[in-house]
View: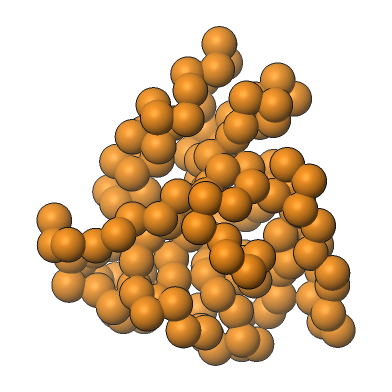
Length: 145
């Protein structure tokens, strides 16, 4: 793997104010193809809602894969991040249309916290965003970026 920083985000009380033509969506109800605005300083940030927007408007990232974890005890953030990295990198090429290692996009993810796990949150949400953290103005699906 080339020297990429693979950012992680955990899924707690940060609410994002909506803008015109945008809406908030619970991180527990994200869907593939959804374009989102990430909170400022979103590396290692926790959030219960994210601002969603149309993919033709400026946005930070796009949901490209969602993986459900089995029920059971909370496996811990380290284990969830290992699982997320594996799942998200494996799903990246099929959605984006280019190999992860040569893409201009990076993969990041949201994982459940211990608190959200207790509320039945079992989803790893994979996000594609530009390596330079610039804004996107179209969908990354099959873009080859």
